[in-house]
Image (cartoon, rainbow, N blue to C red):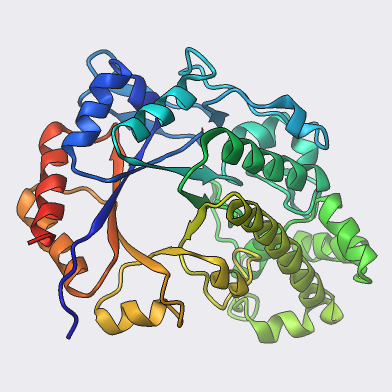
Length: 386
């Protein structure tokens, strides 16, 4: 039986919320939460926010993708891609000053990097977006096989590591995301058609495949022809088959499986390059465990070996210990990112994390929480310290 442990605690935060009504007032509230780490995002995607403690902007309508710091242009020479500075930023150095102020309060500063999940860049640079087999750009995702995209993400990583010197970096969405189903439709799409539409058919990825001996250009044309036929008909039991390894092995004379393998390798290598930059800077990698099935992400589970901190919700101590995979120094943080409407439930759940041997817990997110909720976090974490 595992002995309860005193937990560390991380509070995720939106950067603009740290400036409202001013930085000192915001950090007073962060300190009141009792959390010893603030995980701030320097880049974000599309969302709208209810900010109950904001005195002048309780409802914040988000942007389609933006950064919250002034970039170092010299780092981006190898890519034409440039981010848009958020309209919520008054001064490009605001986030740097906030980072320094966080550390001055004896709070650890970490970063929450959202890579391949935002609409702005795919709309502004459709030539670098993930494409379907017909050449149409997906909204919300770039092609990780396009050299310009890889160069952009690596440059952005170097930029934030140099600028903010984070203790830990949460890597979010550095993989291929699935295809969002259209909100307007009057008929189902078969799983295999969804899968084929969601793969990365950008010429950058296909060129890498061709260079590795995979005839990706011909395959793309064959897949487009197959989709025209499948999408035009209502699904049947015969056409509604699953996407699995057996199907991949034989589909398109084995060409599809070879292409999927190539996409997985390209994506995984970019993740590993990014992780190496983080480690070289002396920072830790924070991530969810990657499963063995990579068909929805193109990310191989070998990246798990590089993770210093895992975000998981284990049922018991045995499951938690198994997640360490023999890496004794690996931290296990249990996320409490849902809505809590009473203190008792939050205290109970945090005590469970302590009882099974977790190293820490995380909460989401500063800017969305009322003062009462911040006080619940403080009490919940303090109770684990005895």
